[in-house]
Image (cartoon, rainbow, N blue to C red; front, top):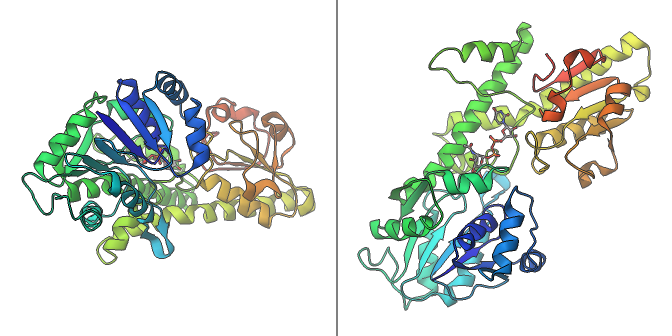
Length: 417
Ligand code: SAJ
């Protein structure tokens, strides 16, 4: 049996590699010719621990091959991006394109699984598109007992940086359009899954994915809101959270410079856009987290003003070092990172030099290239006037607080308290 994975990104490629490692024939499909070429040479175009080794082996033994257009297979997994458009509306254009391209190669008995984070109802919509493209086949909405094609929604829930572990260990929500679709999808994932398959319908599975990330976003927003209140009250928010978490039923997350990544800052909007009047808490959490970088920049401005008064320096002489650019600790992923956003805002405003200390990268993203200098940790500790702690990388946490001689430190992660 052949499995086709459409979309070879952060989710699709690890999933394709997981099936191939279980000696299943996998055809990976991606419109990006460069990615396809790299994979066919046994390489990877994304960084994720253990992924390269797995892809290399799979390609060498012939279980995995990449192409730019779908070929016939027995199961199709769609793992393409679902970004949002203006006004925070989910954009299903990549799913629609994937479906349109696979429709011609579909045959009776095939299974189609949508993995991309999607608004509620997307799987049913996908089935409608397919029915229109292939009137010769019967889909689950037309024949609920024995359709020609089985369709399910099965969201991924892996943590970037731990994808290969979580892909196999985490339980999986399987939302079949019919109970039989759920059974077929569970059989497929059980090829590599150690976690359990928990079955439901497609709409509940879609909502489940959005709920998981909204839960985290709301809880981070709670911590971020507390950090603003504590700042005004002169209370150490990290100590406060540690103490409150000693209560057996309290478990507060950690504040920071904002929420980044490609999921938590996006998915809650899928619920808000479908329910603008009801999703009040979810929307507010997004707004709280999105506004945190601006608050951090205000803190930096105040620190610089204080530094100018205390030292008599001119603004152009003040050096600001931003510690961390990644969207979370110990990774090199800078996309959708609040730390990058804060650094950019500081550099745009500041008259003097702005430095970025990011031990996990060798070059700066385009948005910072002309405004910011990448700086060694030691030099920044030695020469910066103001330090802005943005990401709690282990390398930063290892520096003893007493070693920080700067008087002006804006510490958004509570690393050197
Ligand atoms: N963050 C905080 N405080 C915290 C925890 C996180 O400010 O206490 C920030 C991080 O610094 C980062 C952002 O939140 O900027 C998101 O990081 P994360 O580690 O919470 O999550 P992601 O985006 O790497 O992965 C999430 C995971 N979802 C949940 O934990 C509910 C992952 O399981 C999902 O598969 C992934 O989204 C996804 O693809 O949807």
